[in-house]
Image 1 (cartoon, rainbow, N blue to C red):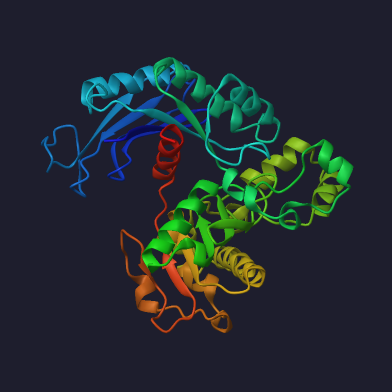
Image 2 (tube, rainbow, N blue to C red; image 1 turned 90 degrees about the horizontal axis):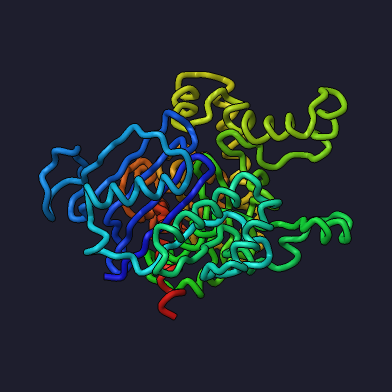
Length: 415
């Protein structure tokens, strides 16, 4: 087995997965929350891939047993302590790291700027660069780096690899990533479109090609990653050529609590008329906007339920959300010249039929024919939700960013 430990370290949480890359299956996963707080909590799940059910700590062990989840209320003061808890969980609950040793640790890093365009073995210089790029991602890169430093202490004898959210989008042409502001100001402050969710867009575009039975190099795709954060990506020949998120994850589609695209003069107006400073504007646009600000619900499931119950504000929020998606689909169709497939992914994209339906309404002229029955059906794997006659295939493709990170990590360390 080629086993990789994947770590996604946030400022107050840490996710991990131990993955058998060749089998494309997780052996274990975990989440440690509220790092640095007294009321921390952690879960460790031992995966049994041959089953689809889940069980508790008293579940039967063996290859046919359900997944086992173990929970702990524990104060975790820092990332070093988080890794200590994780190692203890592996030792007590399994799988044994002595029997399933990871050959590398793959780390999700949000911002790689224009410096990192592929997965990179972590060195002292790489860490310096990740830290220096924190100016572009102050909420993410410092936490990613803290996880890297702690992981190196816990696993000192294996290579560590950084996989950057922004890397997939480094293939965008200058016309796509350049903002129309003074070029000297932009260069000095590194203002350009970077894009995010790149690991997901890469995984889904290749999974869509595999589902269609065609080489990704021959396809032109639009991938819609719709979760609490949301972004669209135009993929031509397996390469990102345009994406909706910009210098930060705030630009683009309407999201759970983020505004997405906005007239920049609105910020000046609110500064002058509402007295909002930079922190106030940041809070408004990132935490009190999106479908939460419009419809009172930051979770799409709650918003859809409210809209179906006749809530006018929720209905409008859903209309704005899907209108923005439809606008991007049309724009990317123009950039690509043709669209072979549209792939919905992530929590909302995979589980909200009404969002898929409303987002593609009126796009028959683009060769999109949604099958209402297929769209309403639930499924666990990649599936087609367009009619057989649809010139543009519409797919639902579950994303797996951890597996993609593991694959890229393995490719680097075995090259």
